[in-house]
Structure formats: C-alpha cells, structure tokens
Image (tube, rainbow, N blue to C red; front, top):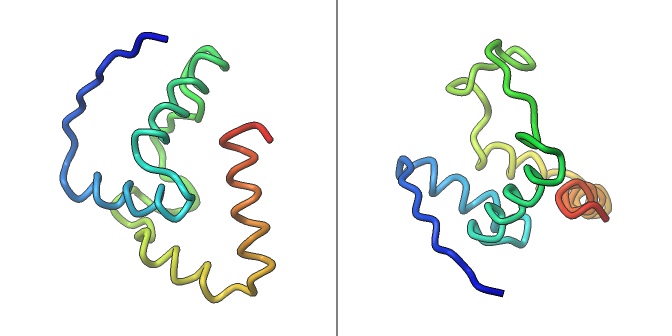
Length: 95
C-alpha cells in the first residue's frame, strides 16, 4: 500500500500533552492520528461531537491537565486502571 505524508503544525504544548496521553495509551501520536482518520471515514464525519458550550462545567482552558488525570488514574487500584485502559482501547479499536 502506498503511503502519503501529512504535515501538521500545532502548538508545542498541545503536541507534548497529546504525546503524553497517547504514550499512556500505548500509542504514538502518528498511530493515534491514523486511528482518528480511520474512525472519521468509518462514521462519515468527525468521530466525536463538536460543541460550542462548556462540557461538564469546564472550558478547555479549565479542564484538568493530562498530568492531573494521570495522577488520578494512578490512585486507582490496578484492576480499575486495567479496566479503564481496556475500555479506551475498545473505543479506539472497536474491540
């Protein structure tokens, strides 16, 4: 299969946070973006809702950081952490 290169410029902080998140999920950013593109084609649009309002009472700037979320996950019992990771992978890969 022939491949094509996609180049994308993003804020350095955004890239670093995304890299950290995807690494926690066992992915690199390239793989995560490939999953996003496949899901967009599968559903015929963006694979998530695009909302103008705050969600869960947070604006993007007020939302917990990846480090804060990771710290909360690490406080969970191992079995709950594994269940959460399995759920994320199932959502991402349709397992």
